[in-house]
Amino acid sequence: MAINISSITILAGQYNNKTSQQLSNSSITNITDVVFPFRAIFYLSNGESVDLLFNEKGDYDVYIDMQ
Image (cartoon, rainbow, N blue to C red; front, side):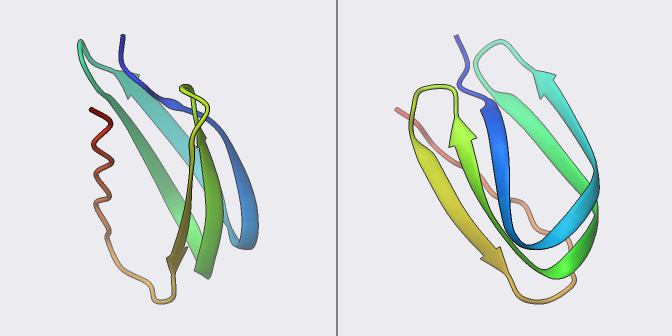
């Protein structure tokens, strides 16, 4: 089963839209309409978390490999 984002805690900035897609062995979450700087803790369905900070407006791809 794919690990996905179970919740997000925003520490700075905001976002207005989030979409998620489950694939056979991975998941994709898109966050759009972001106010920068943006910092958030992403809680994963396996109990782990990732703290990410984006200082400037841009298009970012973040890959988290959980093997």
